[in-house]
Amino acid sequence: MSKTELFSKEDYWAIWIGFALLLLGLFLFFSHPPKNLEQRHRELNALLSAENKKAPYKTVAWYEAFDKQQKIKSTSEPVGKFLSKLTTKPGSWSTNPLDAFLITPRHVKATKAALAEKYNADVSSETITKAIALADDKIAAANSYDSLELNEKASFAIKRWRAVKKSSDKLGKKYNAKATNKIPYLLVWMLILALLFGFGLRVMGQNAAAFFKGFVFVFLMAVVSYTLAGHHNMKAAGIGYAAWAIILGLLTSNTIGTPGWVKPALRTEFFIKTGLVLLGAEILFGKIMSIGLPGIFVAWVVTPIVLVSTFWFGQKVLKIKSKTLNITISADMSVCGVSAAVATAAACKASKEELTLAVGLSMAFTSVMMILEPAFIHWAGMPEVLGGAWIGGTMDATGAVVAAGAFLGDKTLNVAATIKMIQNVLIGIIAFAVAVYFATKVEKTGAAKVGWGEIWKRFPKFILGFIGTSILFSAIYALVGDSNGYTLIDQGVIRGFTKNIRGWLFCLAFVSIGLSTNFKELKEHFKGGTPLLLYVCGQAFNLCLTLLMAYLMFYIVFPYITENI
Image (cartoon, rainbow, N blue to C red):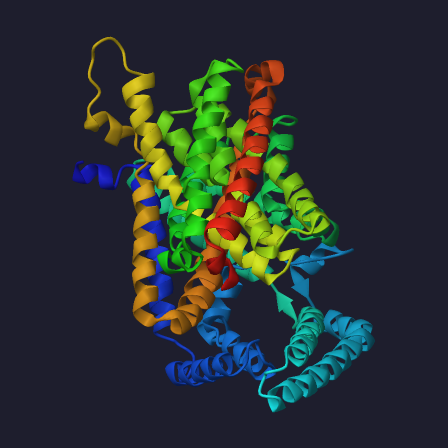
């Protein structure tokens, strides 16, 4: 690898830009922490620990301390608020799309008036249920927690209070909303992204001016995608920004056609690769280990089996001519959707059309599964941990996993998100394995020997950035401790800065996919419906095997781990 390659290849620039953003976030949030951060966490942790030892259930005092700790967020500090506003996206709306961008003082006043009665009723209900929970908690404590009946009564009362509080807090966010104008921040953010990626393209010897011109159009389509996804009906239906970005792009490219001056800004892989480098910071080894061996078995054993089986099925049974299309769809479906598809497509040198087809299938099925899977889990009365493991191991997109898990409760959400996080680690391993396989087996001609040089040449270099950021942030998290890590990293660098940026980059990439795709070019790949059949059969196998493995690991082999989740 020459020094020239480090600054002339897109993969490396994805790493440089990703690392620059992450280091900037670390500097800003760590240099402006909340006041008395360590002391506050130390006191609250001592209280949480004492309450855990005192009672066989989580007491009212435990939850009060927990709530206080959860409110210690770097995103609430001036720096965090500014960065959140800078990287903001259009918000929610019901009747007027302008509400997604502009909330006037008049609108705030009207909202408060409309919600006042309901909000006050919720607050009153929360006060009453907390008082009942506190009374039952004291009765159980007075009996030294020796009465199983009193303990269960107190635990039930506390859970009811928490459910009411959750509803009250959700409404409170709307009731206490402040006047905002997101338009200036969106314009500044568009300029920052244009300069950032334009600079990289300029150093790579490409036309930055042409990129700037087209980027305005791509960014505006991304804004429209976020706006459409923000409508309350679209949220309820689970149709997110990714689906809208692809749909709008496809409608444009297949009707009026994508303007020539826009095409220099269609940097699908550049945007996604940079986003994946940022994603690495969210995959922390400590969190992976928190769910233990059951989660690792579900993610790291099932996924390769499904990938290999689906690829074999596509080649031997469905007779798919293109091995690159087959492996890209198989990785997309079995690992984690778009992220895995991009990495795999780069490793096997799949065409743009093949990548687009794989991503399109993933988006369509994810939207459906995000609604049907949690509905089935609820209907079947599946345990929270099992349901979470099933969702995390089978649903493609991380965002969809979080949304689906949230439908079923906090425990399901946490398990689902952690399983998906563990599964995401495989992106780099799968990409490397695919690069080796295609270089040595698929594309090998005659007796020519394919060496490590060719494997390295086709290996997606941005995966190194993905792995590097994961290692770096895992080390920092371990160094500062869980409590400070939650405040400064989870609720600081990631949630207050880089996660927002990753969302924008993925949205820009999906718009680019749509704008650069023509149905005529895809028609050849849809002959006989084999790609669709491959995805359906592979996902059906994935659903069955993941559910079986999750049940065996969490309830038969390691039940003691499940009890402590």
